Figure 1 (tube, rainbow over the protein chains, first blue to last red):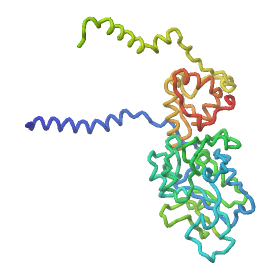
Figure 2 (figure 1 turned 60 degrees about the vertical axis):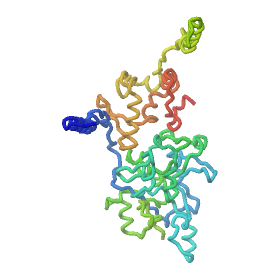
Figure 3 (figure 1 turned 90 degrees about the horizontal axis):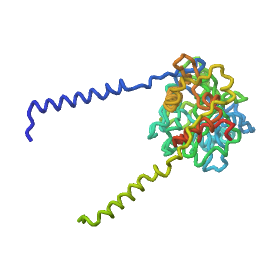
Figure 4 (figure 1 turned 45 degrees about the vertical axis):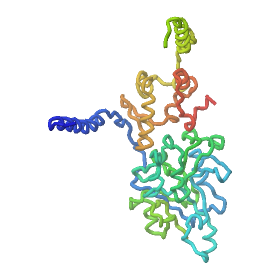
Length: 258
Length: 134
């Protein structure tokens, strides 16, 4: 079929019109103008971070305040079966927390010491990169957050996370929650969950539950970009390490070892 | 090949077919279930001087699902937890801590309509229902 110049230009014109119309319609059809605002009490930061001081922690003497407080606040179920357990914050021995950062002559008290571990809220989070539904995403303040509504339970994020910070709900967690915190939801069967740096508490002007609960002041929380914050001061004055820094995830949880 | 003497059978077949097709209609004739009347009778609502939800009743009736969707996105994605209503009033955005504080009668409020229209929102697998319903 022969196509005339006039006909070709007509079709071309309609195509261009179509390309222009789509964004225009989108712009006008959008009605989701936010009618919400931030709580004036909310703590704001550019990059939240946490420092754990192992010299002050009394985990080995039986203290579990940070873990209990976190799990109580967020309705984290207590499932004993190791394969199905759910944890947001827990303790690991040195060699598990910092593999490759030890050697055979390392001091016994360090080797046996438990270190409190949790989601590192990485600056380059691999879990966010692999999530196919954008259920896991990074907030502007650096918190790696989950939208459980969107989680399809594919567990890519669990495979991607080098810190084992994520747990999967193999069964309905409700029966395993001893006392429900009525102000916070639970999760359901088939979603992944993890530490959220207490977003809901920060947004209401409170410090994370673990930091507030620690009776020995071994946990510090604050804005890493703010020179005057607790964490910045400590990081400037102490030697601190991160978990698996060689992976390039740039964790935002720091450890004082000795 | 259609033969004229098969006409009665064809018509009979068609009548039976249409009858079966219309089964849901004639089976349910006269059995319309009563329209739901969601109850607003809860201790928290009784104490309100001005019985108004975050937005007007007509809007809530028609669009509460959209509002809840927006609420979820604003809180989870943007961290904005204060809702500014049409009339300027401010509310904490939370299904458990705002909606259900007044509507503590989920069975008589939420479920009635949802059952009537045959929708099953899965809010309650994660969000904790108010005490009354347990």
